[in-house]
Image (cartoon, rainbow, N blue to C red):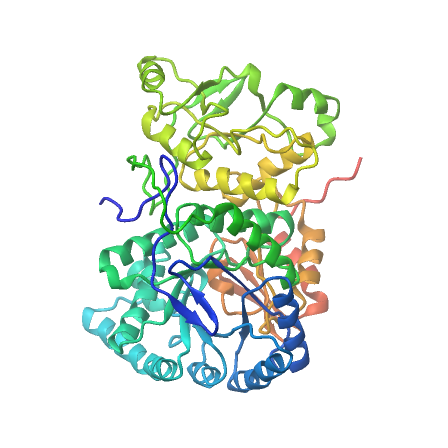
Length: 589
């Protein structure tokens, strides 16, 4: 099936045109700029702290603030939080975040400008039940959901309150899981069920989101949703809110967010964003602003001629390049993507390779026999494809194409048997004072987007001159994209009012105890909302179960309950030992 959406394949793209949905005084979609959101982390019943954290976010450029409302009591307190903000001259719109409690949603809608509902748990409680639904049973379930959702829709319609229909990969309902599986399609169908109910009530002030902690899943879900909306008809032109949930902290969190959010913005998908970091929320805003400035496609303007895609935009499959030896290193399908450096970089670090741990250069560019071409050069493409020999190919530096478009064009035109070397930029850096956040985001968006397309057998960082930093960046991008695991992998949610322990401190303690467990994936969740679902591909989970109590998981199965928080990290390491995944940390040399 030919996609209805357009991806960047030869030059600029236009941002997907949507209707305008207003959230208080902020307009989302249409020709408005991409809006930046965040979420406060304190207890919603702490009115003073909620007001102050919202003021702090607004002061650094946050345009919409979300506050959790886990109970009717919390939802009722939104009246006083909002009143306190308005008394202080702060007009930032407030979004109530709702899970499990329709009554909390209807209470919150009395006070806020927008209500976020999760289709996976608004009218369902997840039990991981396996059941075959007949069409009649499925229709009956949809009618039950209609009865639960309709009062909120009618109230929001009356009061001019908008709704976000926010699907999370980690909390799809059992009903959706049984019919569609743990897939992007299931995420899309979950949201569309709620959208159809809203539309049947002539309510259109809603926005979609398709969040996941896995950038590949998140990207494919948003693309599939955008495509489905396009096919449904011109009046299904609803705005999209972008986010990678449970991205983590530090460089890892910024890279994972950039891969998911940035790659979609570059393709013209997305009208508002939230970067979810396991840090104080104010640190999310500079990252989100930088991503929007770097990646947001213009509304209207020129658009390049379409080129057939060399990949399915809705399903991940790694490009089937031939396996070949490059400088005695195997490259291609069946091998992890390799990290390549320039000779100058290698010379600067050759004397300390044994102290660099896993951040090792594997191939030197000048010794690799790389074929550099402009993918628009018909003669060069024909000559390469006519040669019976396989080559490691890359895009030539200095050409006037965006990086992602250039490599998608390359992958579409050269024979699949040729492995592809990805570069973060086609203009190598000559500025040692360059802002590293910008370098990190550009590299993560360009290389990460292509890896999630299934394109790329090796990577070369050219935008960062510091050798050690460029190597670390290359490996971290490969890990965040799920292409190569070289260290412990963490799925850590940002804090919010539902969180049952200090996520930042706890994440730091878990990292300190387990950071040497290469290839082990650990999920750190402040509450149960997305815990079991987002931990589906994690090896172990640490989840808040009650105030001061922690539940431990193996996969998505809870195995230890109500462990005192003071003992929980040690009990987690014991659990890892019990399952044969523990190794002692190496002794520092």
